[in-house]
Image (cartoon, rainbow, N blue to C red; front, side, top):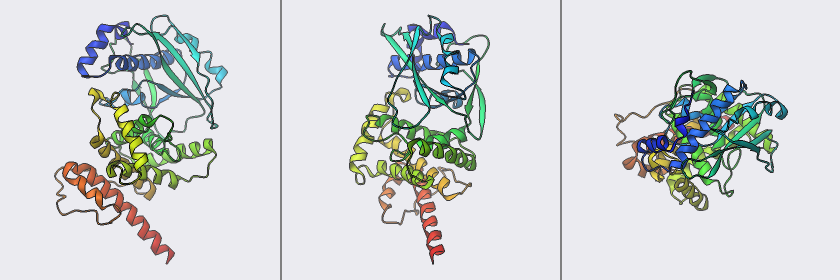
Length: 359
């Protein structure tokens, strides 16, 4: 269980010494978010914990803070209200209220603010709980303990159900598609787009089963397309993720206005990265993995290659003139070059196969 000392200024400052230069109020929010998850689980509520904060538990070396809580609840809003009052204990959270929002989509979701008194700035603050009311369809789930070095714990460990790495990666890939199923440009949430990119790139390093990723992607994309009532196909979403991945390494040569927005997102996101370290070069690295993953899912290929520093890339180039500018990356980040090269190979192979079928 999470100890009260986790909320103290002394403890939070001690965590700041580990995560150098990070805003202590963000560290505090991450601690409170995990505390909210523990209290939801202790209320005997049945749910699946997903989203960025769940990755703090799923990946022990996940290198970004997340301060919201996203859950899937297979019940009605009135059923949920039986559990929420149990969260309020006057210590971790003082009260909660529903956050009424205009919903332009048909997503069955509610939002709640759980308030606490900050020990960092002596002001009232809140953690946002997003609840999706539907039956979860992740192809694989795992049970993880609510443990992290952000937390001071003792006694019984509370466990929570989360999507597996491969399952949540498929989900996250749909979120990194700003023109179709993801967070859109131009709504002041460019940092959210970069968060999805960061998560996709990080999860890719740990994924094992592309078939599982694809299954999860298909299920999630189908839901998101249905919510939005548009005519996008799975292929449209994957092409969107791929095209967005290429905007970043081109540094404005393609999609200049979108690149400027993504640049702003990278700058804003850096305060959530451990040690405030996230820049354009790191974003390019994550983008290369998102590009490769999108083509793997699109091509129905399950075998994939990992970059190995021992690979000699000296005589390997991207020949296609449309993408040849990516060759410049090889000197500064051979890993990113490797994944962009693999992504484009799959893209060209798919086009060649399609061309042969037409003839």
